[in-house]
Image 1: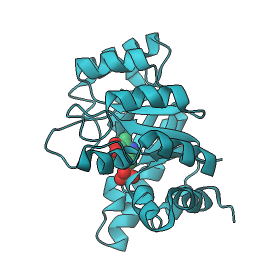
Image 2: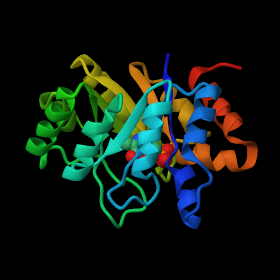
Image 3: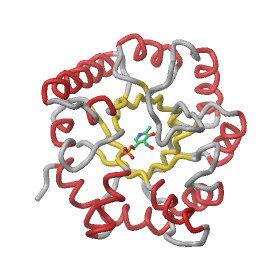
Length: 240
Ligand code: PXP
């Protein structure tokens, strides 16, 4: 059954806005797990704009499902990841000025560095996922790098301005999932998914996990985090 990873970065965004101790992302992770989330995702950005090093350490100790740590290819971040040993390390591109992760990895350009990092992390017993666009060549390179998981960037689908473009983007995710699956890769997907655009994605066979953050944390402001996670789980798992 399709799994849900909840990204809790924006709980820390709210805390950092005031520079105080709440809301606490560790408490948020516990509530998400109790509500039925299959994993907890966070991104230790180079500028530490939301999640801090101490958060990742505490999450590693307290999470009872799986910790999926998003990370860039920055040497300091790689060292921290090796030390923390998340269950999954998801390598993502990172630009300081961006509001959020804007695109997939340029795996063709950075193949050597990515491949080296995949092997370094796998050597520490960490499963590695690569965040890439649903493009055949990028999937082939991901497979060649030794990574066993890919996460398909659903941003173009989520931001499509017309139903026609959205259908085209959905088809790209479907084709990419089938292709990656045939190559033996585990496939997850995420970015920009919310309560109205996730159902269509759940129809894609072969997808293992959806990683969703901003929409769930936003909904939690109105209905509470437990309910926000449960409502997304209903869409993903098709339960009442
Ligand atoms: N997956 C990856 C690799 C991401 O970088 C992000 C954004 O942090 C997400 C999923 C979640 O995206 P959103 O917050 O738009 O749901």
